[in-house]
Image 1 (cartoon, rainbow, N blue to C red):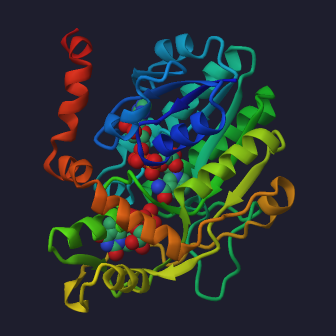
Image 2 (tube, helix red, strand yellow; image 1 turned 135 degrees about the vertical axis):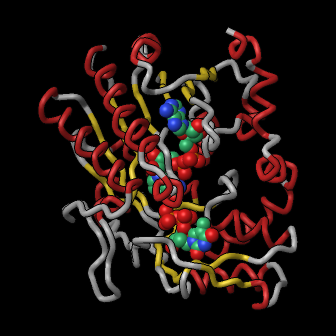
Length: 338
Ligand code: NAD
Ligand code: TYD
């Protein structure tokens, strides 16, 4: 198969490319990524020489470029997005542009070129926020996004489904819960807390730390996307999750314990506006129809993740200092001069 991966220089996309080329070494991958602040080619350093892999620096909103790149492609796996809720609170426009318009450009290109198979990577956040006693989200839960990030992802999901019904585009969608693991940008909860502690800094817990997320190790999410690509029913949505609901404060305490730090390192800070209280996923459909389920326990995943950040200090220190952006400037200086 020849795959076009969008957003492959980000956290989940780069882990997906590594996963895919490892499992299907004869497939070829074109990685289209704009290298926003969240994109980092150092995430893919060990495969940049692989002859079945090609990186293209470009924007998914650039219809001319996307139309050229989809020629001969069998499948688009669409990961590119603006993804950080706190940034979407500061301003919505990049979220609307990339997550909605960018998805539309890709859908049009797929539709106009022999109906290329399209897998859309989305989030559980489109379903809104649960109370403690509510049942977990499933594929029939009505959409109720509550922040600009989740609203823009919800809009993109609706567009993807609309192209299936209107244009018969062969699509699938995955809505996954919160991911953690290697190569996650250190503005998100796990990598921020782990790297702060290595640096001897405190960890900022929003509000009282009572909010609940369902956490999944990134390779399990990518195995779920793989299962949908290979066995999913066209036109369908699959909920993916780790079946591990935890309060932020309990995760924080676990990280402190594993890193040998005391509770004094916790700093309770002002809560995020409109902070969704709880997300939870019912993954029965994916289990029954795809034979997929998460394999990495939370404890094992957390230990592996902490080890990874301890062993890859240069990677995250380059990000925290801003130096990581020099890497692509060096590699692509000829393009930047144009
Ligand atoms: P990320 O922010 O780490 O990476 C996003 C990537 O997209 C970056 O490499 C960035 O450069 C690229 N990108 C952004 N705008 C672009 C544009 N206009 N054109 C081309 N590339 C662009 O994100 P992530 O955490 O890896 O998330 C990947 C996908 O998975 C997103 O669609 C997200 O909504 C979804 N998702 C994430 C989580 C999670 O917990 N992180 C959970 C469920 C679903
Ligand atoms: P985050 O990684 O931003 O994911 P999302 O908001 O998309 O679920 O945050 C995960 C949880 O951790 C969320 O409830 C907000 C909380 N959080 C903090 O308490 N402190 C922080 O510094 C960050 C980034 C998040």
